[in-house]
Amino acid sequence: MSANYEPNIVAFLCNWCSYAGADLAGTSRVSYPANIQIIRVMCSGRVNPLYVMNALQQGADGVLVSGCHPGDCHYMEGNYYARRRLGMLKDLMEFVGVDPKRFHMSWVSASEGHKWKEVVEKTVEDARDAGPFEGFRRRQIDW
Amino acid sequence: MDLELLRKTGAEVAARDDVKYLLGWKQGTYGYRVAPAFVENAAGAAELIFSPLCTANLATYLTLVEQLPVPRGEEPDTRKVALMVKGCDSRAVTQLLVEKGIERDEVVVIGCPCPGVVDPALLAEKYPETEEPAEMKWDGEDFLLIRNGEETKISRDELLAEKCRLCRYPNPVVSDEMLGEPVETWAPGEDKGVEEVEAKDVDSRLEYWMDQFDKCVRCYSCRNVCPLCYCQDCILDRLNPTWVNRSVNFSENTAFNIARAFHLAGRCIECGECERVCPANIPLGKINRKLARDVRDKYGFEPGVDPEAEPFQASYKPDDPEDFIL
Image (cartoon, rainbow over all chains, first blue to last red; front, side, top):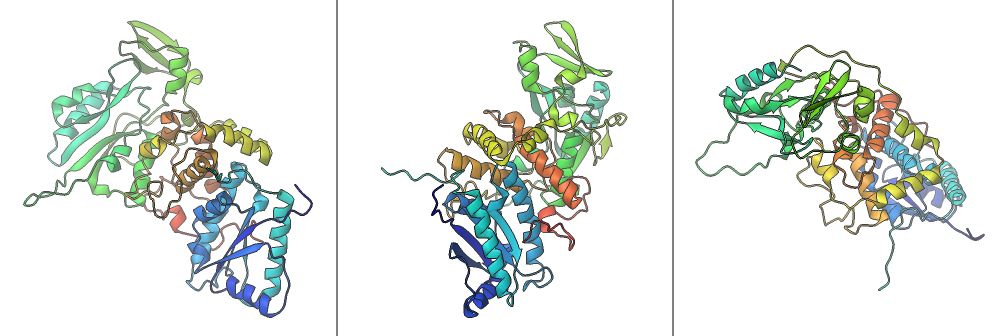
């Protein structure tokens, strides 16, 4: 691992809380690491576990899924489903040898710009610890 | 298992007007083979068997049978399908009921209490297959192998399949007719296979699974044989979006295997069919059992036991564990 290694993180944020929270962090001039690529989804319950898998295949070193706090979901219960599914996925990935530091899940509400900063810092730091992920990256063949 | 009783019940059920056919096991053409029998009348029931060689989970055929469109002017065939189940197979039936894959009035379930079946690969390795069909029986605590006219007594521990060693439901959980007395349940042994992998650190686990998944030829046998993989439009076959590329390499093999295992999280009833049919001998059972154990320990959910249950991934509890959340 080179000294100036910067991890790529893909973050799936729910439209109603976490995306607005990240937006608030921006408007509040809170600075956080720029390693994160945000993908807005309508609900954390919409995040198919295969998205996480696919992100890792396509070059992400870490994945973050963030949604509303339990009970605050815009769709009433989407984040409860997400919690169950992605919790299982985390266990499964750990079992097949993906460092648990590469996958995080968090609850960030629209008013938690500062929490968003902490979450991103933790995610980036963990991914940096774990190093570049060559595990099951899709190989590009140059013909 | 009393074969007389089995064949008599089979004949009675197959002769019923509201039964289309009965699914059971019959002697295969050579060696230790056991073939599925589609019995359409009472006479056909004479070939039915139930022995330690009957590893196949017949519940697969409930959803595997092609549903052709009904020709104009004809009524759809609404007769029931009867099938014979072991303990694990009956859990597949229950899980199909939970998921509304089948309706309860579409099937007649004939339960066979099962003292445990053999591991066919292990059997063929230790006792080479013969050209002549061989038979096997339960003999008290042991297995009795009959091939070329000579009988061999084999201890249960020697050949018992891994899934049976860990079995907690040897008696069918759902049945219309029960053949014989329920067998005594045994204490499931420790799951050494899973623990062995869990004891490794993350990097050696990845190495281990790399070796395993590298063998995968993506024949999708594990999906096809699984009684609970019955989506009409499987994501693995889909081209748009292409969830899993078709190239056979570690990246795509892992994506496929994780997708397959994850789609069975909270649904897998541990019948071990995927592992049995795998031509590359990938220990798929380890992944499935690990997930099943996590679902049981962390979420207190067990698939295929209660037909009234909510499907695991389509339900939640407010107090699900969330210790992994930042």
